[in-house]
Amino acid sequence: MTLADLPRGSSAIVVSVRAPPEAPEWVEWLEAIGFLPGEQVRVVTQGMPGGDPLVVRVGDSTFALRRVEAACVTVQL
Image (cartoon, rainbow, N blue to C red; front, side, top):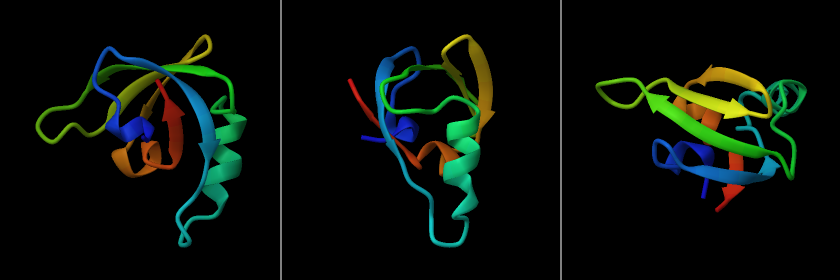
């Protein structure tokens, strides 16, 4: 499951971060802002319509991520 699939209000643990081939730098960027294996994440809310962007909380920080970025973060409930 990815962070993009996590329902609003749900929490999970980051398992891994991977990037699409066209944007390999996303791994370094997502890890630098706190999306590291073992960290707890929570989807706070989603934009409407379409659910973009997602507002997510990781550690003590809150970020807005596009769904395509959130799909790079593999999570486990």
